Image (tube, rainbow, N blue to C red):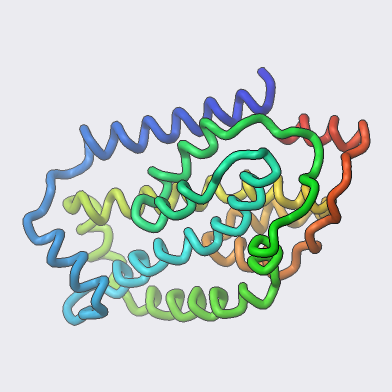
Length: 230
């Protein structure tokens, strides 16, 4: 099977599985879920397991880490990725997986020019505040109650779906990372391993990756490599 078709098929299976599980198999809604979300959003964390607080806030960081790479990918493919990037702030993997299902095939060449906004988003120093935020969330999570989290995961629809969403985003990011690394001619072997580190791997990659290449057509050998990883 062609690798592009395989990626689309796996993304479609993951998307349908996530939606089906949420609709049919996840625990029933808790009447207090909306109050919990409100308190988490407003920083009213008294009495809430700090593992849940850390996970909720981590879900807000994923779109910021996906966004720059997603927009670059969409621009190179001649497709608008920004609706998916924006929707991911509220829907996480539920919004991002369809992008990987429906995006066009790679063109095999770089665009004529990178838009100024994408060039600004590509600056390495932007990962510094995200790295600090991830470190703080890690310290927060260490103070949480794992046994209580497991119990809530088993009984709470919101906690369970949020956890599965986080796992999907973690497993999906290496696909975008490796494609972005190839775009830059960055073939360091560490990236496939780094990509699977939740959140932290994304920050490490975006802080140490090579700069964006100048617009140019890819060579025949590069086109073959692009087809192989797509």
